[in-house]
Image (cartoon, rainbow, N blue to C red; front, top):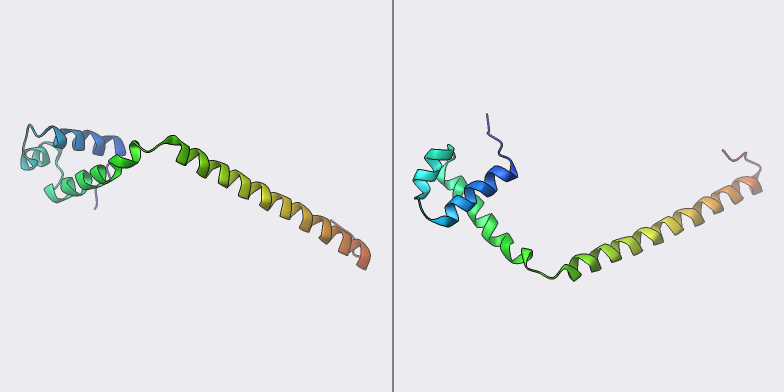
Length: 96
């Protein structure tokens, strides 16, 4: 059965790895995690570090773009709902 670790636990272990006070083998034994898994967590953490320092404008722009797309889709839904209602009335079908 596989073990599942929380993000907090992984972050704690990676912090320990980055301190370099102990060897990977020592940390693996202490936290009961395979050394290969520790190396994967460390690589993932180091790969994600640059994104922590990116400007928040990128996130704001992405959020604004999402909101704009969402509003367009809601407008399209409203338009199509109106058209369906009109077509049902035109054909004599009772709208629900």
